[in-house]
Image (tube, rainbow, N blue to C red; front, side):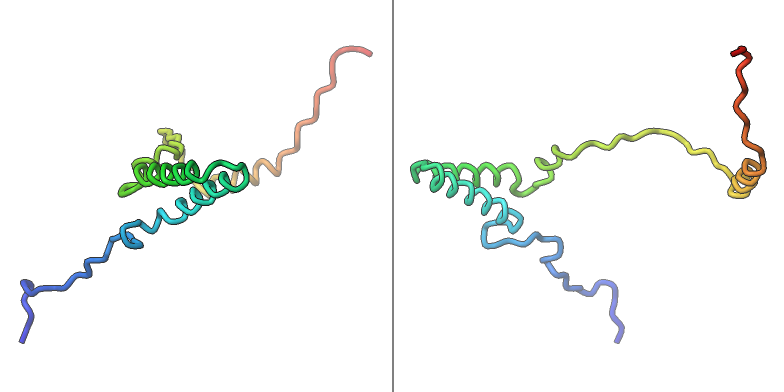
Length: 120
């Protein structure tokens, strides 16, 4: 019994999917922990009231999620420097010609500096 090309082929639907921790994308966890640590640092070290710290943490997490949520490349790609492209064509030099030129430059005596024509 031979299989035809019209047979069903199962495909793993998780291919190409990004990992999640519930509703939170996994690439958001580390920055959220940094924002949380900064908020707690503000509250404990500088004596900022806790309700302001919680507001800062919520604001920081929400802003970061909005900016980098589903398509982080849209926001984060703005911080990469653009490449400096130049158009040009390199000249071809044969390796054999380079060896000959190298040997020729070694066999030549280096030029002596000319003495000045001025009398001392």
